[in-house]
Length: 288
Image (cartoon, rainbow, N blue to C red):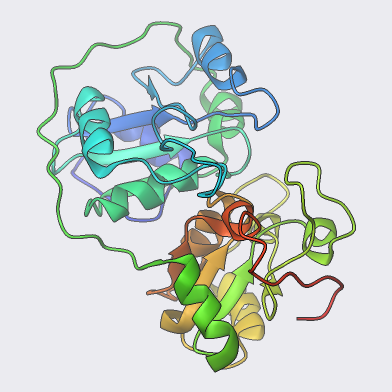
């Protein structure tokens, strides 16, 4: 068995393959399709990384919707605690999450684990596609694990509410980074939410900008340079990430962590929560 190793950001296919049999590693399949919520579970049944368990973005990684709290509200911490235990996760377990979209959904699990105080969590570089291409190993078996001893600890990540974002519009206390596509940000079209546009003052950093063509993350140096240009001298602790529903915003946060820019926050409700209250302002166009 390989020497102990853990990561708090990214794991390569080779690293995962070397540690796959370790009992203190747990692989979680987070494949999902916003337009077909059942697609992830179907894909998992057709083939997944050996030993991986499945996490549903809608059922496990999100809470109940009220019509005013966004499309993917945060789950209850008690429910998430039970989910991690069901997946056989202990306090010292190295969690590795993967999907087929360059970490688009896996980064949500990465953030949620950190929200629960668990630091040993990473996203698989290249995801399912990269794994298959390099190992050609898959399984259709659903593993059964003894319940884990995962415990809730103080959060490792800052969380910002809609009210705090609203207050910062006047003070400039927080820089909002919007992870959606430029078309949605500019208000030209939005195939998912009923209102297009962005939070006034927000800057656009599409989450896809964090990736190389092979769906691995850009190097820390490149990411640091790109985010430094977007932040214009502002420290990471003054940044709040936002997207459509609090999922791809986590990708930008992960990318900043990879770059060594730690301490940024998440506005979990994001755009879908923001527009649920008509009092909150909406901006359009390419400017901030």
